[in-house]
Image: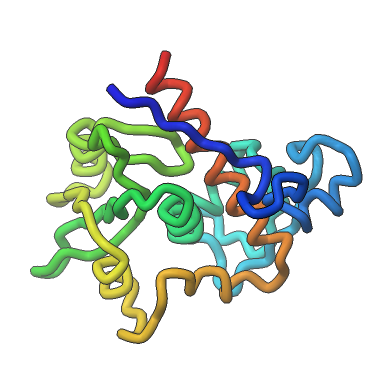
Length: 192
């Protein structure tokens, strides 16, 4: 099995510059996981209906799970896709005679589904979701075009569209940091 090598702390063209300049500025020397960053999504999250969350970069707590698993999973999936080029994993359930998109992550080179809750065997996760939804469910490997169609975005939407949905650059840093954190955890498990 090949190892995933991630070099995340600096930009390739400027090794002395942080990949997360706005987060670094807000941290003022503190570890990133101690910096609470407020997210006020345009729509409430789907489980608890939150319109304000404080996320701590790389800390997977109830608010991070709520944000990235119940409404804004596409931000994290887009950031992981941006970092790795891995295809999207579209979770879809059968509803009213058609497949309905419900969640998205990425598909690792080993074929697992990776999201805020970690790396999952696709068959096991599908079985769990069939029970939870009470209807046929699948995890489909997809391209950006598939995600764009599932989310009903216009045809001219570009793969970096998600960057324009965040109102402040520090929010982009936080999403990218969560993606890097999950990818690093995944790489450690793959090489262990």
